[in-house]
Image (cartoon, rainbow, N blue to C red; front, side, top):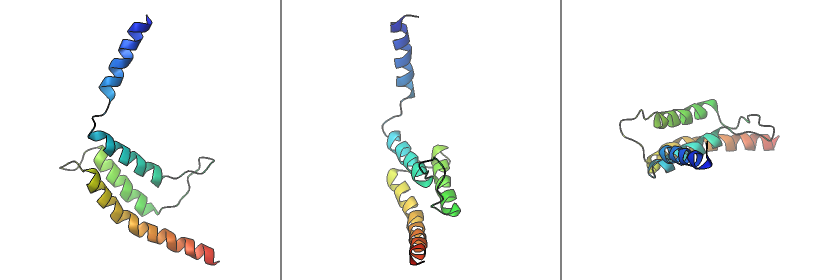
Length: 104
């Protein structure tokens, strides 16, 4: 196959698989949440920083948005508000656990 035919096929693939601009920030936000929730150490082993309840709550938010299960699509501001309500108590729990470890 000639290189021009290969290039034509590739450009068609990339142009058809690109996300629309309004959907792109939501996908980035959801990916960022996934990366932050599932921490890995240098050996690529999971580091259990967050409680299982927190992780499952974040995964529910991600799954709902990825599979578009809600009646209206969430905006970035909606997701930020929803996840902030989950993050604040979790951060407080992590801070308490860290203070407890430091006091030993």
